[in-house]
Amino acid sequence: MPARPIIEIETPHGLARAHLRPAEGARGTLALGHGAAGGVGARDLAAASRAAESRGFGVVLVEQPYRVGGRRAPAPARQLDAAWLAVVEHLRAARLIRSSLVVGGRSSGARVACRTADATGAAGVVCLAFPLQPPRRAGSAPAPSRLAELDAVELPTLVVQGEHDPFGMPPGAANRSVVRVAGSHSLTTDLAAVAAAVGEWLERFR
Image (spheres, rainbow, N blue to C red):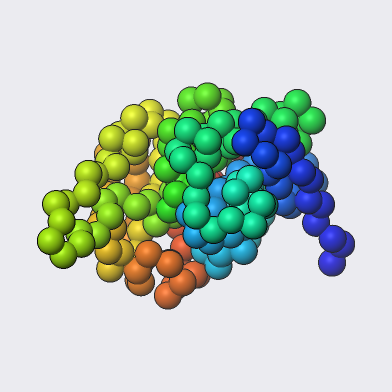
């Protein structure tokens, strides 16, 4: 199998990396970001990538600058968003993104994709394990819900969520499909179900 290209992209907050999985004659591109403490090698991201490729999509896995710099603690949201937008802008300018761009990611990466969906000119959003509400810690008040980030997305949206995710289950909406799969926040219990959900949903983009 030929090596998949990796390019480094300068952003306002350091170097990001884009792991490219191009497809000949692709009908679109799926760009995915990683979770807060994980990387682009997460198994659910790999399952979603394979599903997209099987539907004729190219895939880009975006590694945020804090991860490239060797840090595990995520950067603030505004920095994550700015870096993501810089990567997408660069890929568009280099003609590495097809016209039907679907953005997404797992957990924190899904939040970034939601917050920047309009600015990226995306056609849809894929959220793997959206962290709806952080689990309540003993003796502390409940953390605020992030549902507003999902509700702000007016594009077709897919959420793939583990039935036992401690962050909760987002509700469906007119433009939002929520697929429950076995497992928790890691989404590794039934990767075939994750891939099936993503692949079937991507069929709408032609």
